[in-house]
Image 1: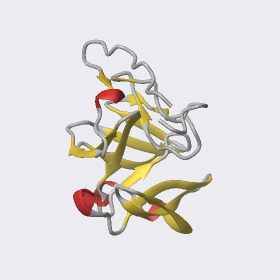
Image 2: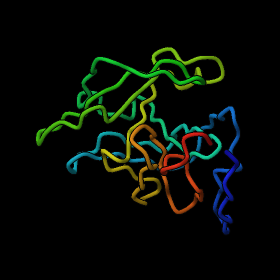
Image 3: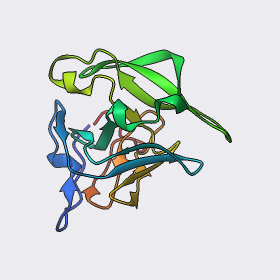
Length: 164
């Protein structure tokens, strides 16, 4: 499969096709907030984001900035070739439960050690915001990237993108 044609990035935008592979980890000065049913689950001004070719950034929040009492660990996990084994959490609020809405790496590998216990959230399942802008979820059922107006694709996850 050949690489798709990247969309042109405008002023203040990044193209996901300029992101590296293997991915890069970076702490950024952005305001990230996660809500479920109007309750704030996470709120930070120092998130970590992961940048990987063809993927919108995934934001991770320090556990000190998360309402951990709203999270319930669930069985099962996944494996990332770069970060290692992920464990999943339901978000439990008075109005209900959002299954497997968050994940973390208990023992991330190598260059991703700084992600230890930082939580990421699926914007397809919970309301996520970057600097006040509501995030759009990365296409596909597996990916957790956060699409905002400052990133352009095309993004992995759309039909036909499995082998990018």
